[in-house]
Image 1: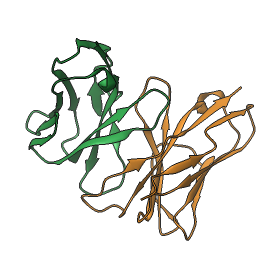
Image 2: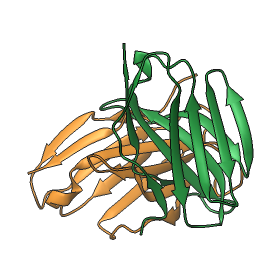
Image 3: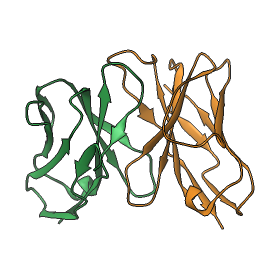
Length: 115
Length: 111
Protein backbone atom coordinates (compact mmCIF):
# COMPACT_ATOMS: atom_id res chain seq x y z
CA UNK A 1 0.00 0.00 0.00
CA UNK A 2 1.44 3.37 -1.04
CA UNK A 3 1.19 6.21 1.44
CA UNK A 4 0.52 9.89 0.79
CA UNK A 5 3.28 11.55 -1.22
CA UNK A 6 3.95 15.24 -1.79
CA UNK A 7 6.21 17.23 -4.07
CA UNK A 8 8.40 19.15 -3.94
CA UNK A 9 9.85 18.66 -0.45
CA UNK A 10 11.19 22.20 -0.24
CA UNK A 11 10.53 25.37 -2.18
CA UNK A 12 11.79 28.95 -2.01
CA UNK A 13 9.78 31.73 -3.64
CA UNK A 14 9.73 35.51 -3.51
CA UNK A 15 6.81 37.69 -2.46
CA UNK A 16 4.23 38.11 -5.21
CA UNK A 17 5.07 34.89 -7.02
CA UNK A 18 2.77 31.92 -7.51
CA UNK A 19 3.37 28.34 -6.36
CA UNK A 20 1.88 24.92 -7.09
CA UNK A 21 2.21 22.03 -4.65
CA UNK A 22 1.29 18.45 -5.51
CA UNK A 23 -0.12 15.51 -3.59
CA UNK A 24 -0.82 11.87 -4.42
CA UNK A 25 -3.37 10.27 -2.13
CA UNK A 26 -2.95 6.93 -0.40
CA UNK A 27 -4.08 3.92 -2.41
CA UNK A 28 -7.86 3.47 -2.08
CA UNK A 29 -8.49 7.01 -0.82
CA UNK A 30 -10.70 9.40 -2.82
CA UNK A 31 -10.56 12.55 -0.68
CA UNK A 32 -7.71 15.00 -0.20
CA UNK A 33 -7.44 17.75 2.43
CA UNK A 34 -4.81 20.48 2.59
CA UNK A 35 -3.45 22.06 5.77
CA UNK A 36 -1.01 24.88 6.50
CA UNK A 37 1.30 24.46 9.49
CA UNK A 38 3.25 27.52 10.61
CA UNK A 39 6.36 26.96 12.69
CA UNK A 40 5.50 25.91 16.25
CA UNK A 41 1.76 25.69 15.57
CA UNK A 42 -0.78 23.02 14.76
CA UNK A 43 -2.02 22.48 11.19
CA UNK A 44 -4.80 24.78 9.94
CA UNK A 45 -7.40 23.43 7.49
CA UNK A 46 -7.27 25.10 4.07
CA UNK A 47 -9.80 23.05 2.05
CA UNK A 48 -10.82 19.56 1.00
CA UNK A 49 -11.45 18.01 -2.41
CA UNK A 50 -13.83 15.15 -3.11
CA UNK A 51 -14.91 13.96 -6.55
CA UNK A 52 -12.84 16.72 -8.10
CA UNK A 53 -14.76 19.50 -6.34
CA UNK A 54 -13.99 21.66 -3.33
CA UNK A 55 -15.89 20.26 -0.37
CA UNK A 56 -15.31 22.56 2.58
CA UNK A 57 -12.93 25.45 3.10
CA UNK A 58 -11.19 26.98 6.10
CA UNK A 59 -10.45 30.63 6.76
CA UNK A 60 -8.09 31.18 3.84
CA UNK A 61 -8.37 33.83 1.10
CA UNK A 62 -9.32 33.01 -2.52
CA UNK A 63 -5.68 33.23 -3.63
CA UNK A 64 -5.44 29.73 -2.15
CA UNK A 65 -7.04 27.39 -4.69
CA UNK A 66 -6.87 23.75 -5.60
CA UNK A 67 -7.65 20.97 -7.99
CA UNK A 68 -8.34 17.28 -7.74
CA UNK A 69 -7.77 14.96 -10.69
CA UNK A 70 -9.63 11.78 -11.72
CA UNK A 71 -6.88 9.65 -10.12
CA UNK A 72 -7.60 11.53 -6.82
CA UNK A 73 -4.27 13.34 -6.79
CA UNK A 74 -4.46 17.04 -5.97
CA UNK A 75 -2.75 20.40 -6.38
CA UNK A 76 -2.65 23.41 -4.09
CA UNK A 77 -2.06 26.73 -5.81
CA UNK A 78 -1.18 29.92 -4.00
CA UNK A 79 -1.11 33.21 -5.89
CA UNK A 80 0.46 36.53 -4.88
CA UNK A 81 2.62 34.93 -2.21
CA UNK A 82 3.06 36.80 1.06
CA UNK A 83 5.78 36.41 3.68
CA UNK A 84 3.22 34.87 6.08
CA UNK A 85 2.61 32.05 3.60
CA UNK A 86 5.94 30.55 4.69
CA UNK A 87 4.91 27.26 6.31
CA UNK A 88 4.77 23.49 6.00
CA UNK A 89 1.93 22.54 3.65
CA UNK A 90 0.42 19.18 4.46
CA UNK A 91 -1.79 16.99 2.34
CA UNK A 92 -4.00 14.36 3.97
CA UNK A 93 -6.03 11.66 2.28
CA UNK A 94 -9.08 9.75 3.48
CA UNK A 95 -11.54 7.29 2.05
CA UNK A 96 -14.82 9.24 2.34
CA UNK A 97 -15.85 12.87 2.53
CA UNK A 98 -17.85 14.62 5.23
CA UNK A 99 -19.09 11.38 6.70
CA UNK A 100 -18.55 10.18 10.21
CA UNK A 101 -15.71 7.89 10.99
CA UNK A 102 -13.11 8.56 8.34
CA UNK A 103 -9.55 9.23 9.37
CA UNK A 104 -7.02 11.36 7.58
CA UNK A 105 -3.50 10.22 6.82
CA UNK A 106 -0.85 12.84 6.20
CA UNK A 107 1.98 13.13 3.74
CA UNK A 108 5.45 14.40 4.65
CA UNK A 109 4.63 17.97 3.63
CA UNK A 110 6.16 20.66 1.43
CA UNK A 111 8.14 23.33 3.22
CA UNK A 112 7.62 26.70 1.53
CA UNK A 113 9.78 29.71 2.28
CA UNK A 114 8.69 33.09 0.91
CA UNK A 115 11.39 35.76 0.81
CA UNK B 1 -9.61 31.93 22.49
CA UNK B 2 -8.62 28.92 20.40
CA UNK B 3 -11.11 26.08 19.97
CA UNK B 4 -8.49 23.53 21.06
CA UNK B 5 -5.85 24.30 23.68
CA UNK B 6 -2.70 22.29 24.23
CA UNK B 7 0.30 23.05 26.43
CA UNK B 8 3.31 23.58 24.13
CA UNK B 9 5.82 22.07 26.58
CA UNK B 10 8.50 20.95 26.31
CA UNK B 11 7.67 18.01 28.53
CA UNK B 12 10.86 16.24 29.57
CA UNK B 13 10.72 12.74 31.13
CA UNK B 14 13.27 10.00 31.83
CA UNK B 15 13.19 6.84 29.74
CA UNK B 16 10.64 4.36 31.06
CA UNK B 17 8.38 7.00 32.61
CA UNK B 18 4.74 7.56 31.74
CA UNK B 19 4.09 10.52 29.45
CA UNK B 20 0.81 12.30 30.11
CA UNK B 21 -0.56 14.68 27.49
CA UNK B 22 -3.87 16.50 27.32
CA UNK B 23 -6.02 18.93 25.38
CA UNK B 24 -9.04 20.99 26.28
CA UNK B 25 -11.64 22.21 23.83
CA UNK B 26 -14.55 24.58 23.79
CA UNK B 27 -16.83 23.27 21.02
CA UNK B 28 -19.22 20.58 22.24
CA UNK B 29 -19.92 19.58 18.62
CA UNK B 30 -16.62 17.70 18.41
CA UNK B 31 -17.32 13.96 18.26
CA UNK B 32 -14.11 12.40 16.92
CA UNK B 33 -10.80 12.76 18.68
CA UNK B 34 -7.35 11.91 17.38
CA UNK B 35 -3.75 12.02 18.50
CA UNK B 36 -0.97 12.47 15.96
CA UNK B 37 2.79 12.23 16.46
CA UNK B 38 5.02 14.54 14.42
CA UNK B 39 8.76 14.22 14.22
CA UNK B 40 10.79 17.27 13.30
CA UNK B 41 10.28 18.29 9.66
CA UNK B 42 7.91 15.36 9.00
CA UNK B 43 4.16 14.98 8.49
CA UNK B 44 1.85 14.01 11.38
CA UNK B 45 1.39 10.26 11.96
CA UNK B 46 -1.93 9.01 13.32
CA UNK B 47 -1.53 7.29 16.71
CA UNK B 48 -4.99 7.01 18.21
CA UNK B 49 -8.56 7.61 17.04
CA UNK B 50 -11.58 7.60 19.34
CA UNK B 51 -15.25 8.37 18.99
CA UNK B 52 -17.13 10.21 21.76
CA UNK B 53 -16.29 9.57 25.42
CA UNK B 54 -14.35 6.63 26.77
CA UNK B 55 -10.95 4.98 26.77
CA UNK B 56 -8.99 3.23 24.06
CA UNK B 57 -5.76 1.31 24.43
CA UNK B 58 -3.27 0.31 21.76
CA UNK B 59 0.02 -1.13 22.93
CA UNK B 60 1.82 1.45 25.04
CA UNK B 61 -0.72 4.15 24.18
CA UNK B 62 -3.99 4.93 25.99
CA UNK B 63 -6.38 7.65 24.86
CA UNK B 64 -9.13 9.01 27.10
CA UNK B 65 -12.01 11.30 26.18
CA UNK B 66 -14.19 13.09 28.73
CA UNK B 67 -16.79 15.01 26.76
CA UNK B 68 -18.51 16.32 29.88
CA UNK B 69 -15.31 18.16 30.81
CA UNK B 70 -14.24 18.80 27.20
CA UNK B 71 -10.90 17.19 28.00
CA UNK B 72 -8.89 14.51 26.21
CA UNK B 73 -5.71 12.75 27.26
CA UNK B 74 -3.00 10.53 25.82
CA UNK B 75 -0.79 8.37 28.02
CA UNK B 76 2.41 6.73 26.79
CA UNK B 77 3.72 3.94 29.01
CA UNK B 78 7.34 2.80 29.17
CA UNK B 79 8.46 5.83 27.18
CA UNK B 80 11.46 5.48 24.86
CA UNK B 81 13.84 8.09 23.40
CA UNK B 82 12.20 7.36 20.05
CA UNK B 83 8.96 8.77 21.49
CA UNK B 84 10.58 12.22 21.51
CA UNK B 85 8.40 14.22 19.13
CA UNK B 86 5.59 16.75 19.02
CA UNK B 87 2.17 15.32 19.86
CA UNK B 88 -0.87 16.95 18.27
CA UNK B 89 -4.45 16.45 19.33
CA UNK B 90 -7.10 16.86 16.63
CA UNK B 91 -10.89 16.87 16.65
CA UNK B 92 -13.71 16.64 14.17
CA UNK B 93 -17.45 17.25 14.25
CA UNK B 94 -19.88 14.52 13.28
CA UNK B 95 -20.66 16.31 10.03
CA UNK B 96 -18.02 18.01 7.99
CA UNK B 97 -14.52 17.30 6.93
CA UNK B 98 -12.20 19.60 8.79
CA UNK B 99 -9.78 18.55 11.52
CA UNK B 100 -9.17 21.16 14.21
CA UNK B 101 -5.76 20.79 15.83
CA UNK B 102 -4.20 21.89 19.07
CA UNK B 103 -0.85 23.64 18.88
CA UNK B 104 1.09 20.51 19.83
CA UNK B 105 3.15 19.48 22.86
CA UNK B 106 6.85 18.80 22.43
CA UNK B 107 8.00 15.73 24.35
CA UNK B 108 11.60 14.84 25.19
CA UNK B 109 12.38 11.37 26.54
CA UNK B 110 15.87 11.32 27.99
CA UNK B 111 17.91 8.07 28.07
